[in-house]
Image 1 (cartoon, one colour):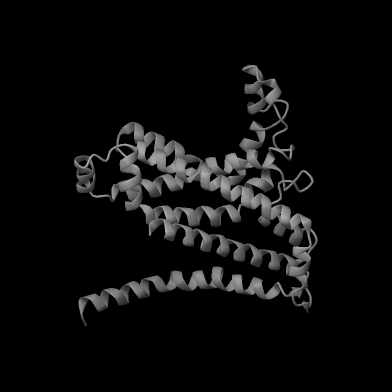
Image 2 (cartoon, helix red, strand yellow):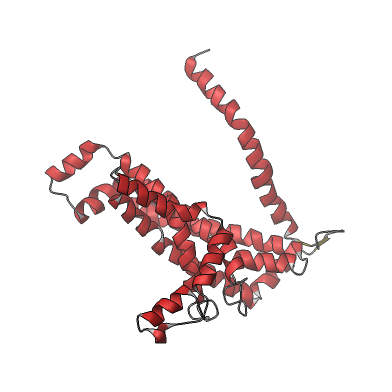
Length: 291
């Protein structure tokens, strides 16, 4: 048997257990959930087929549209607040110095922390009376800027997006550093000879060379923002008055609080469809950009 064929066979056999686990615990539950979205089911007993009634109810529910709006705000905030910052830090911290390694570790550290811990920390920061945010504003004479950050519907989604962005910059930083390190030194030398330095080098040399990585990070950012759950549950629980409800928290509250597993399955299916739609739009836009 040729060496290449033996190598491919070994890779296939080695990947098979992981593939089977992925199919069993990810792919099959997705289709199972989509199936139960057509039923009225309380999680026990017989399920009653109701067709598209769950989806009709969902589209007529104002809270669903509010959750979708909040999620789109979070997606936009994540794309603006995570990827550019991670790319900028990657460019600044590309050299493998002691200081760079320290800053990389510091930026990545929030990702290591539990999201529950992050939510609790920022909940205390935003606390109205003795929270760090309002205390600092009072100390520097900006008391008029103090807010009930998690209770004010005008600012609570912005307040929630900050810790989410803060805790997710680290992975994108690592991805961008790896992509930048794969650029050949000869490309940098040729760019310098042609006079491409600073922003010109970034726009016309660096970004085209790592554009595939940028597209991947956009996909990860969109999908991650649409399934955001832990931070909101810890910090606000979707309140007050459902003003910080996201699609994932809406699904959770509509499923486990009232035992409507069929309706919750329909909502989870809709989250997947919305995610696929946004990722498809991202693919079309980034393909045109790369072309």
